[in-house]
Length: 443
Ligand code: F0G
Image (cartoon, rainbow, N blue to C red; front, side, top):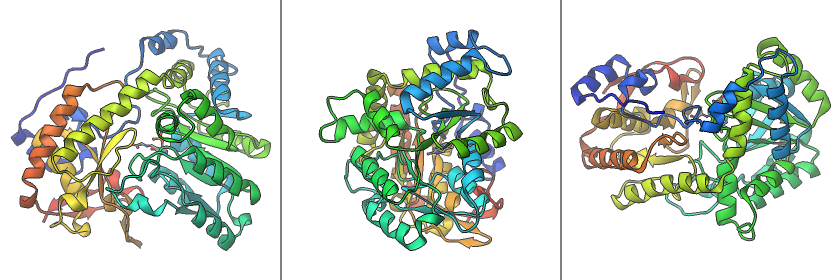
C-alpha cells in the first residue's frame, strides 16, 4: 500500500499550529509530513495479515478467530485466561477496576500515562521505581529500563504486601526512553513478588523489542530465539496487559491475560459491561485474526533487527551532530533531552513542547512531549521532576531510511537555531491526561 504525503510550506504550518493551540495532537494528520507522534496503531499490516482479515469469523460468540487468537497468546504467554480488549488501556481499566481502590499501591519500573491514569481513577497510587541511572539521559547502560529491586523490596515492606495487589514491569520502558528490562531483573522481581505473595504483571506492549534487546545485550541469552526469551519472560509473571497496537502489529487491539480464576471472572464481567462478549472484547473477528498473525510475525528476528537498527541509525546521526538524546537508543523511538537542547527554557515553559512545535514548523514532523505537559498538573498542583523529553516514535514497517534522513536534517537545523527559541504558556488544561488537549500561547 502506498500513502501519499502532502507537502506544506512553513507559512502554512505556522497557521495550522496556531489554530491547534501549539498542540501537535490537534493537527490534522494530512497536514503532517512525517508522523512520529506514536508507534501505536500506526504500523503497516503485512500481506498475510490482510489475507487474515478476509478469513475473520464474525460470530458473536465462540468465533474461530477468537480461538486462533487465544491459542497464539497462550503459546506465547502460557497464561490461563485470555481476555481480548479493544486496546491496552481497556485491559488496564478492567484490571485496576478489579484489583485497585483507595489505599492500594501499584509499583512499576515506570507507568505509562494511561496505566497511571487508570490506577488513579480507582483511587489507588501508581508508584514509579526506575533504577537511578534511568534519570541520566546520556549514561550508557544496556538495561536502563530495569525496576529498582532494592527500592521495590523497601516499598513492599513500607506499604505492606496486603496493600499491593500487584507489581508491574513495563517492557520496554516507554516513559523512560523505550529502554529494555533485563531478564535477570524480571526474574528477580518475580522472586520478590513470590516471597511476598504479590501477583506480578507485565505491561507487554513492546515485548518483542524487549526480548530482542535481551538476546543482543544480556550475557548467556545470545543463542536463544527471541520467542523463547519472550516465553520465559511471560512465564515469570502471573498476568499481562497488552496493547496490540505496538508489538501486535495491528491498528487496534489489546488483551488482558492472567492465571487468577477469580480476577478473570470479575474482569470478564466488567468486559461484558463495556467492551463486549468475552470471545471478542470490542474487536471484530477479523481484527482478532490479524492480531494473532501479527503476534507471530513480530518475533521474526530479521524484522526486529531492521527495526532496532533504524532507531540506532537515527540516534547515531543525531548524536554525531551534538543533539542530546537518551542513550543508548531504545526500541521504538528516539528521545530528545529537551532540557539540554534548550538550556534557556525553564521547565515551567515546557521545553519539550517548544521542540515539538519547532519540529513541525521547520519540517512538518510530528513528535510528542513526554515531560511536564504530560505528567504535571496545575489543579491540584503536581510538580513533575523527571526528564523533559520529546519522543519521535517510529511506526512499524512504514518509514524508510530516507524518511529518517530527512528527520535528522530538520532536527539538526532546529538545533542550530535553538538559542533563538522561547518558551510557551499553557492556557487550557483538562483535569486528566492534559497533554491530549492542552492549549498554549507563545511567551
Ligand atoms: N502501556 C504502554 C507502555 C504504552 O506505551 C501504551 C500506549 C499503553 C500501555 C496503552 O495502550 O494506547 O492501546 O490503550 N502507548 C501509546 C504511545 C499510546 O504513544 O506510546 P493503548
